[in-house]
Length: 267
Length: 135
Image 1 (spheres, rainbow over the protein chains, first blue to last red):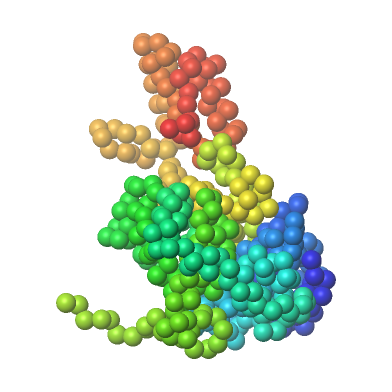
Image 2: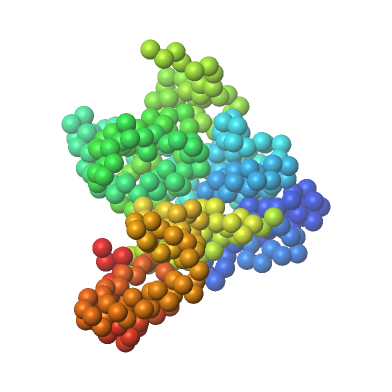
């Protein structure tokens, strides 16, 4: 729990620099997302360390998108770790958020969390508390890459076979905001099958995460059957970086797969 | 401007997964799994992820309806209750207590489920009571 951040947020609210702050609250022993609107009422303000540093992380960006849709003229503060900031940058590029109405309050992640996440950049550009830890290299992807191709295929097929099609990975993803989701398209994904068609269901999602996934890891945390989704999406990010020198969330460049233009000709 | 999270338990199966209802200005806008809950540790099944749907569903019945000639007709509460009680009485007297079955729902409160089973057992005097979570 960071008192520095609580103090900073209190100041922002008191001075009217933000209308409200999207953060976390500890209530009855539970840590839940909360909107703080009053500098004098920061009861239960929390930064998510219950059983370990940053143990409880929620997709606060999703809450922010819903808030700003209803209140487009209000300025919101939001608690951001390295990954959340990448999410904010990407959501702005995809026109889901207006960065002029957002005040990020940064928190750098400690070494244990950075290692658990194998995070390339476990700190936002500017942060109020926490110490900057250097990025961690990707051991899980290397391990899978080292398997010979038939073992690699079997590894993924075995993992996908446990899927119960809960859509948790998609529901919790801060970057998933499509009104019509491909995973619910009857032409692509047959209904009524558990596990859903392997590997098409997961490969469809992986392809959609190309140039979009900010590597927050909430998908893997939300998977009830522990499918190594993060490893899959990290691999996809590696491929995109190799071909286009692009990684989502690091700069203002748009994704090479972000085609917002005229409708392709129907044939 | 008021956003709050209400930590609650999924109403469906007996697992009792913790979930968080997102309420914006008094309106239910979404669900998140509760990561602080030791039962599900931040994970939900597809029913849990959509448990908020029935609260705001447009398909909810909001007025008493009686089916007459294959048509659902809106009636007053008095007429609906009179009709239900007289018909249940008639069917029980004519065909016996076990000719009637009661089906409750995981979407109801525990208190409502208690009332229905009490009604089935003590008033109609049948054991034919079940619940959608068992199906």
